[in-house]
Length: 317
Image 1 (tube, one colour):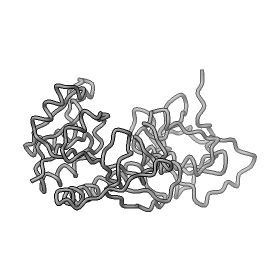
Image 2 (tube, helix red, strand yellow):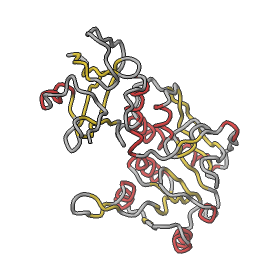
Image 3 (cartoon, one colour):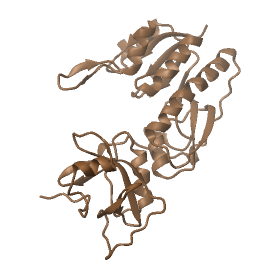
Image 4 (cartoon, helix red, strand yellow):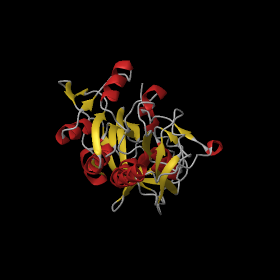
């Protein structure tokens, strides 16, 4: 039976680890070191480590994939590496440890959106289609031969979080299918067209800042693209205000005067808080002031009495 070393860290990688462990021999798990969290800065294992320990699989957590780490990997005698959101760059010296190579799950329509944030980028740009791709890992980022690709239509309601949940579930099945064919020698890769490649970088906290001068549709996509993290946000009363959910369909303002971008105009009792953008209105349905709970718009307004007729995005001092 093929021996697999599984490299992954977050929740989205856990279903694939479980599925592969049922069908193959997972000889070890490679994951990031435990992280300090909370006020007490207590160390917490990654979701993949927690699941590996539950399944009785040996866990490796090197800070760096140096010679010592490579020797630990080699001692497990793996045939193939399966990598899903591991979080570290794998150099050639690591890839060379696996006789049958390394495979990686990437949630984009490769060669489009190579890099760290393909789902956020697709949603932010208003793409109508993306994909789940399993590729053979190569030294150049996300450039390996495509072993499997399943297109997905986007209907304009997805968040990055909701789509990655779907990828997590479906990707586990796809990965088992790919590894089964690999074990039987039935797998043929398709080279990527590098001339069609596009790239996306790691998402930073400041990427979620809402520009109220932008069109309403662009703002709504940004909110979904950065949900749940880092979150689409603005400023109100010198506090960070996260907009967790918004909509733009069939909105119009019939009040007096010419509103300016970021102005809180009023409330649609069924849908949410109306805010002017650079092109049309956006309706805020769920909001969260920093250090508070996320609330639906009615609950939010019950607790924040002076929100209407203010301007979002302004920072005093």
